[in-house]
Length: 199
Image 1 (tube, rainbow, N blue to C red):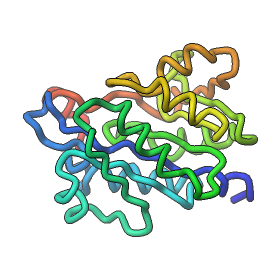
Image 2: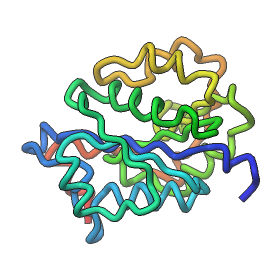
Image 3: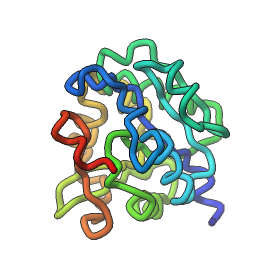
Image 4: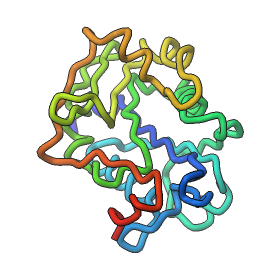
């Protein structure tokens, strides 16, 4: 691992309540015998993120009890029900003062995106002005990499379920797109029909 990637902290957004899944918190959905949140943390670490911050919300206590999150910084977002934007803000806020110069942001409900895609986007990091995103057949998706110079602007525009979408759209020219369609599938686990993706 090069020194530069040590300046990038993995930021996993795992606060969702799974409203369309009958209220089952997404972090605890089982995949290959382990909670989704464990899979995502493992993928970030395998990609080269030695430091991982995990934002929890729905059933945060149950997630802490049932998921192996040793070595992670766990951030509980009390406003998780307001949408992903508040979790992104809470996660970025938790990085201030840690020395991180960029965040590699991933979503807990995308188990089809693993270490190979994370590693590709991580490799686009150069410094705190970096902005990069995975792309699938040219369409922007996750994970995304935000240099620290962008955190304040992203936090200011992250509302509801939009996360960083508005900020990325406004800075389209600055975003490095990293094609990952050959190594990952960007489906979400949002509805009961999506559960067929889990093993």
